[in-house]
Image (cartoon, rainbow, N blue to C red; front, top):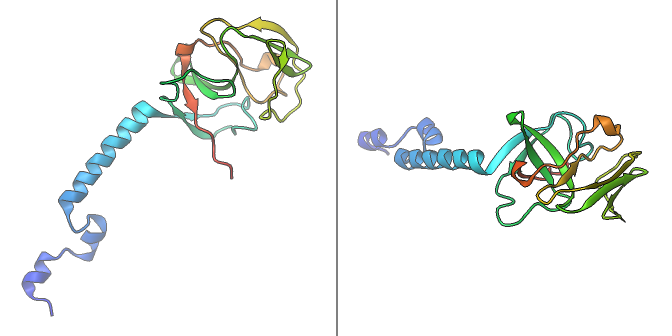
Length: 178
């Protein structure tokens, strides 16, 4: 049988569930978790919400994804990467697009097919028919040609462009398939 002294010193079941048997250790764990979370979500992973259908079917409208801000710390963006691009409208306005043209390349659309430096580029992520016609366009030395995956939108309604490297925030983490 437990004595009155043992009962007074042992934490109640509610305290053990909420705080644990050692409150100081639990407090240290909480502080470490909060600091790591703040650093991670402030400097490494940035959430981005998809508005619009330009990245369908790869990324659904309204979905929330994370941008790895450290992805291009040791290498430059690559063709096929889905990136977040900061816009001049403000820090909180970003586009999510796929890189199809690298610095110095020539990009063209003929009968809906993408040509880079005169060669047809296979794009398995494009699922809908495309009828775009756009002559060759030279990508600048510090630019990347970006476009969305939803190519059944009319050319004029689709946001595309040539952002410079400093406007690319990071690589969008791939979504889990369900």
